[in-house]
Amino acid sequence: MNEMTSVTTAKDWASDQEVRWCPGCGDYAVLKAVQRTMPDLGVAREKTVFISGIGCSSRFPYYMSTYGFHTIHGRAPAFATGVKLANPELDVWIITGDGDALSIGGNHTMHVLRRNLDCQILLFNNEIYGLTKGQYSPTSRVGTRSPSTPFGSVDRPVTPCAFALGSGARFIARGIDVHKNLPDVLKAAHAHRGASFVEIYQNCVVYNDDVFAGFTERDVAADKQLWLKAGEKMLFAGGTKGLALDVDRLCLKVVAGDDPAVITHDPKNKGIAAMLIEMPDSFPVALGVIYEDPAPTFESAVVEQNKAAASGKTPDLQKLVSKGQTWMVEKEPHKL
Amino acid sequence: MIGLLAAAQAVMSVPVAPGPTLPPVTSGYSIVVARAASQSDPQPIACGSDFCTSWFLGEFDQAVTLAGEPLPSKFEARLEMGSPYNMQYRLLLLVGRDPEGTLRVRSTAGFNTRTKEACLDGDDTAALTPEPGGPALFKRGRAMCTIDR
Image (tube, rainbow over all chains, first blue to last red):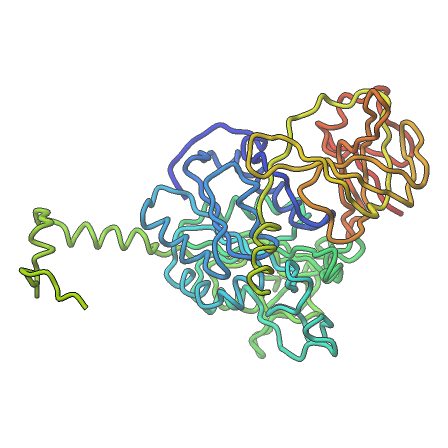
């Protein structure tokens, strides 16, 4: 997050490029949500950078009227780290997908999270490789039939937020592409100083349509979505159900909404966050800010370290290049 | 062969800039749900950039007119895009007419399969006269939407 103020509208954040995803793709909704949210953040376009890897979602920087990089597969975190170190004043957003962030770039994602670079990471999870026409991805469920798994995937999928928590992320949230709460999740991510990891359930209309219907369809949404708010009870199903801690088994259980045992959401509770992230199918899906516990950021530590190392010293480039073993070339080298 | 494929992929990945903004559609419009069956015959548009969109000749079928001038179930209309669609999509379209009668798609929206909704941008439909109505259309904010049942 940066200390900047700027008055803009959503249109100011839209570029002049032709937006090109499959008609009906959830990416359109996320793009609109981001463009609508940016004016509320009070940030300046010239201080904002969107960095992506490869995949459908990674076309995102073209469509934002900001600085941007469409980089190489899985390596957006490395570019983002360089950008932020070179200019810590910049507001850095990483746009990635489940394949880009968790397969090809799994190692980079882990390190940007544990380092706690001050940036927002939006992971568009559609549980498939859409750009390459529908192969199964690291988040595809067991049994997913795809061109690369014609008999159904036998891989056990990774849970992105569990991966983030295990990697040391200090901010973990979830949203849904077309849900009205997505802008609030984005604002919370931006307000957090450090690496903010946001998993966005994004519907791929062509290769994995309705894969999230089990908790996003209107008729099941109330029962299957738990929107978390700090300091508020963990209630769902219109307040008729809630989550409580089963102390004997050290896990969560569903209780009546008026049960005094219903837990109040404390985003700093890492243990509960781990349980919320990996609730079984019979539970609702935890959405909103699941975990937030700020810690010093990577770039601030690097800047401080550099400042300390340079303190009291006079810059001398000649002295630096003459340091250690040096050679004088007195003659032209022998020609072969 | 690999080099050719890489080059083709690079060309397909190039972002393209749209052409100059056309005056908004006012009258003689059609709001229609149709399937984009194919796109061919691209007419390049000068946009001041190295890579611009083109006016493709779009073939549409399974069309149902929701408001405005009725269109047949199959029709052809020019459609601005960078490259043809990778498959056939069902779309909500705002179709205008050039003075000489050429149909020109002026706004498109895909259907969200979860909500079954498609919404045309409010800016594209704001100047339509008479204002589109009918049971199939509704407003969501400024956007003009329909639900594909």
